[in-house]
Length: 271
Image (cartoon, rainbow, N blue to C red; front, top):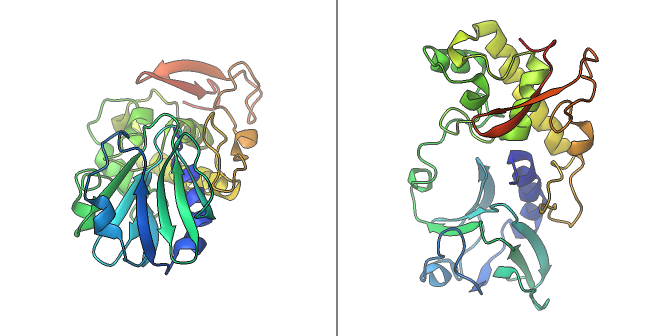
C-alpha cells in the first residue's frame, strides 16, 4: 500500500496543475471502490474552484469553495493529469475535469481506493477526526511519544504504526526509523526512555523526508503521478534485507513478524 511519502509525492505532482482551477465536471465510471462513491458527489463539486490541496495522513484533500474532495489511493491507486479527451482505460474510474481542458484521473485496478465529498468541518469527518499528529509537523516530537507511551506494553513498532498516535508511519518506514534510532522493534513502548524517543522522532522525520526527496518507495502497483517509480527502495537500510549485512555493523539483518507484519532489524545495533 502506498505510504505517506508516496502520497506526498503525488500531492506535490498534481498540485501545480489543480491549484486555482475550476471544476467543470466530475465523471464517475465506477462507484464500487472501498466505499461506494455517493450518488450526489458529482453535483456537489461541479463549478467549484480548487482553493488548496493538502494531505492528511494518507488522504489527499482538495479544498473547494464549500467543502473538500477526499481521495485515498488504496493499494493500487494512482493519479494522472491528462488532456480531458484522453480515452479512459479499464481501471480509470474517476475523472475530475478542469476548466483548462485537462482532467485529474484516478486509476485503481483493485478498487481499494476511495473518494468522498466532505462538507465542513472537514477535520471532523469520521475517517479523519481520530488521527494523531502529522510526523513532519512541530506537534510530533520525542516528548509527545514519551508521554503517550507510558504504561503501554505493546511493541514500540506497533505503537508508532498506530494512526491514533502518529499518522503515516507504515511498515517500511517504521522498520527503517527504528533501525536508525537503534531501538529494537519488539521493546515495549512503555519501556523506551525519553531520550530514545527523541532519537526515534528525529529518525522518523529523517526517513520520511528522505523518502519524499527520492520519490517514494517503489511498491508493486504504485507509481508516481508522472508514471515513474519511486527510488527510495534503493536506500533501504533493513527492510526486505533479511540476511544482508547491517549498514551500521555488518551483522546479518533478521526478520520476524510483529503485529502480523514482517519486521526487519539488526540484533546488534537495535536493543
